[in-house]
Length: 407
Image 1 (cartoon, helix red, strand yellow):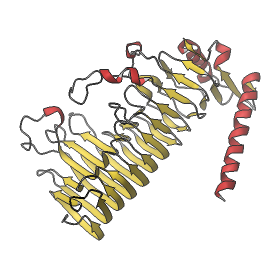
Image 2 (tube, helix red, strand yellow):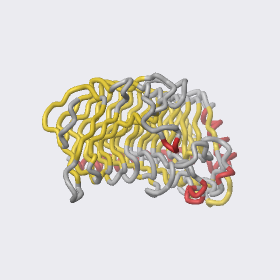
Image 3 (spheres, helix red, strand yellow):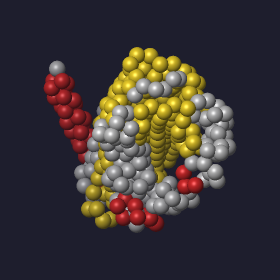
Image 4 (spheres, helix red, strand yellow):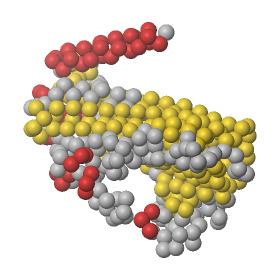
């Protein structure tokens, strides 16, 4: 059955691209219109800057009112300095990348937050199986964010802001200068069959970063980076994540939260059926000890997660204080309220003894935290895995390894 499904999927993809190829020659297909960037003078030689030509193709496609429109980037390496694709558009629009989009090596060329950015667009599909190459290797030495809170901001590979009812399907992103995919104020957005890759020691190369967004679905993705596989920031609600292969990287992180006054609650997160392999963290929630906003984190479910040699599989850290930003460690209590968080069937191996660590706020203790069917084994030779829980209220069901947390 699986092989039959694969064959049908391949055939469907073949006929889809055949249709696109034919349509790109004629300009029309069944009432829709294809905007082939080559017809605007774009060249896939890896040298010429195609920003103007591809932007013109986008503008014409966006304003096409005769049906659905498609911007088509064929095989080849298309160098882009930077581009912003703005809406609103007059109909459904598809952006097909079959070739490679290549970023400038020099980070100073890019003057905006994201190298490629979509803004104020509804009903957008980005697909095609193509590659975004951020050429980040030439910029990583400039990144000192691990010790400098006012570090230089480098470009994200691709960003979506104020985009609704849209999706990414079958995209590859490598070697971003900073993050790979960034989402701000998006709604009803699906991310599937995406592959994100950067070396494990590349700084701040988050895979997917989400803030102030709602009703998003992430499934069947592979992420290997030097930072969070998925970073969930304030104001994110109703986010469903499943079938993620994460590693190397820093796992799936919520936060950090509480640093700024105008932050919003994070509500409704589900992470299911995923694997973390060789990451520094697994499932992590982090809030600033010296927080200035009183927000809440609630209605979370982590279910059926495998850990393979993960340093810190389960972490709640409400004493987060990087770069010496707290003048006296342990002096402050986070004002972020964490409640209604369920961990079910979390299993595998930890490379540190502290396989389960929950350090909640003394002023705002974690509430309704549920642990069920946890089995985390320390892979070292100097003892068994340990559990640490502080200021945590909730319940325990089933077998819990490591034991010792009375929630």
